[in-house]
Amino acid sequence: MAAYTPFQIENMLDSLQIVVDTREQDTAQFRERIRGFGVPCIREKLNVGDYGAVYTDTKGIKRNLHSVAVCERKMSLDELCHCFTKDRKRFQREFDRAKADGCRVHLIVENASYEKLFAHQYRSRLSPKSLIASLLSWSARYNMEPHFCKAETTGRLIADILHYELREYLINQ
Image (cartoon, rainbow, N blue to C red):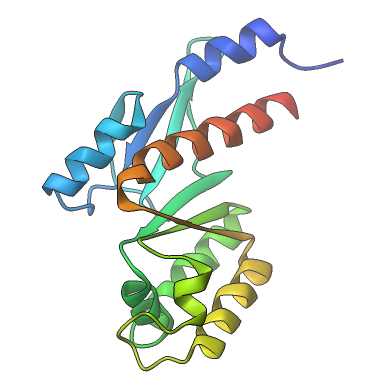
C-alpha cells in the first residue's frame, strides 16, 4: 500500500518551494532564473548545491529535499573546467558531502552541450578527453546527473528537476 494518496502527493507537490543558496549572487541573470521557476523560492544556506527544495507534508510540517536531490549550476564549460582543475579539491569535498548524505546532484551547465565539449569550444586548456572523463567518472562516482541547457531555460529546468525528484520521492515512500 502506498504511503500517500495521489491527492496528498499533489498537495505536497503544490507546496514545493525552491531553496536558493545564499551564496548565489543577485544579478539580472539570477533574477531571470528565479522568475523561470514558476514557484515560490526562499534563500537559505545549503551545504551542497546551489538549489534545493522544501515542501509541506500531510501534517503541515515543512520538510526539505536536500538529502534527496539538489541542483548545482555552472554558467559555462569554462567554469566547469575550473571546477575540475584549479578548484577540484573544493568541488570534490562538496560532492563527497552529497554522497555521504545519499543525495543526487543535478549538475546544470549553461550555454553548453556535448558537441561544444568535444569540439573544445571553451577557453580552458583542459582537453575534451580529460573533461569528459571527469564529467562521466563523477556521474558514476557521485550519483551526479549532468544537464546542458541555455541560460534562459535554467530556472524552468531547476524547478522541473526538483518537482519530479520530490514526486518520485513521495511515490516511493
